[in-house]
Length: 178
Ligand SMILES: O=P(O)(O)OC[C@H]1O[C@H](OP(=O)(O)OP(=O)(O)O)[C@H](O)[C@@H]1O
Ligand SMILES: Nc1nc2[nH]cnc2c(=O)[nH]1
Image (tube, rainbow, N blue to C red; front, side, top):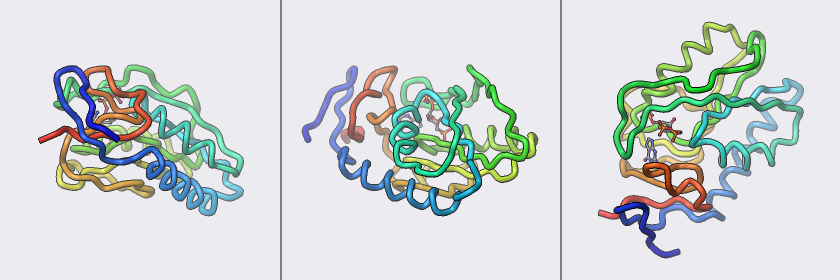
């Protein structure tokens, strides 16, 4: 893999497509075991989680449903501090086993704000499946139940994650070059 340019910034390869695929399959197997007979409802957080949610669900072999919501707070490489619900939830989660599917937990602000709203709707259980976690950056605590990769506190693109709208279609993950 070679370094790439997105807008004005250079990014270096960080996680290959194969590495991601292998780990996503492992997480799917863990979920299949834990949720057998429970018909979980996956909720993907758009935009960033579209690719992770799609690949994860291909390896879910138990009965399951998926829906999406759209939350956004980032502008370029910085959190705006404001988490906006651009598209809300269209399913009743009361008494459902819910698994949130998120691409990245950075400061933790997005899920820290959003999870209590879901708890209020009294799901039977509420867990999180997260592709990337930046432990050094997380200042708002979030319980992560299924985590694919812990990564350093550097901006990343690819596999659903963008830099100012570009890079989401890359099948691998790249890290901002020093
Ligand atoms: O832990 P945090 O610091 O809150 O950051 C994580 C959030 O940032 C990204 O969303 P973004 O606002 O960039 O929207 P997007 O998913 O449409 O790219 C990502 O998809 C997470 O939802
Ligand atoms: N693309 C991208 N979006 C993010 N949102 C929060 N952290 C990140 C990151 O490192 N990269």
